[in-house]
Amino acid sequence: MGLAASAGVFLALIVLPVLAILDRAAAAGFLPSLPGSRTVVLQALRLSAWTSACALLVIVALGTPCAYLLARHPFRGRALVDSLIELPLVLPPTVAGIGLLMAFGRRGLLGPYLESLGITLPFTAAAVVLAQVFVAGPFYIRAARAGFEAVAPHLELVARTLGVSDWQVFWRVTVPLAAPSLLSGLTMAWARALGEFGATIMFAGSFPGRTQTMTVAIYAELERDLDGALAMAAILLGVSFALLALLRLALGRGRAVA
Image 1 (cartoon, rainbow, N blue to C red):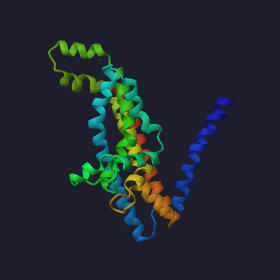
Image 2: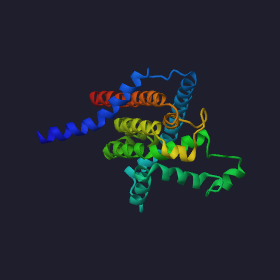
Image 3: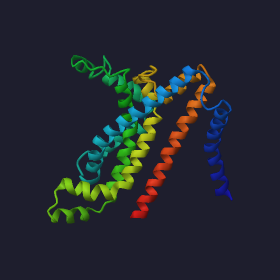
Image 4: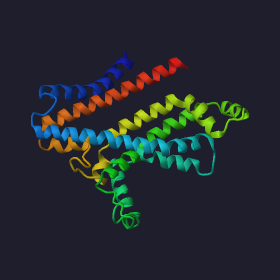
């Protein structure tokens, strides 16, 4: 009974805020009545969708080799590298935003070099993508590393003895076997990128149609219209739940095939 009661209390802490958002959003009609608010929602949705997609491409392209390196190749300082990669998981988002600004801003470490090349990152859509990569990348790398570590090394060795190149072994043997973990990490990273707020508003600002993602738009709308903020929160909640359901379905099919 004690375990069930504890589980019930914790579940209530999760479910009640979700139900409260849906209840109030339904009472308000889910979408604000003002045409301007609808435009803000659509712009924020489009921006969140394509920036998170771009962030995922960067995360997969850079994070997959990194995860494989950590999983398969011991080297001096690997524990330090692993800790640095996971640092964004515990770093406050506002601190992450300030860090990005101090690194890539005009007066940051790389700012003068970027400016000499005609590149401006802060308060642009590229800044949104960079912030999402920073906070969401570790989720993918952790899951991908666990997936690669779960693949028996002798399976890769057998494939190599058959004359298959390392690149073909990776794509034909390692990736298919680690696919459930890769998909899990990809989905979690996508959800984290969609929900990113602190680093984004510090590094990219809140410019409608340019850097105002759904989370930033919710915060801005909350100061003007509670119903509008609730509507956007309900939409983002639905998207997040859909991503979670998709992950569960994909992992279930993966286990069934295996």
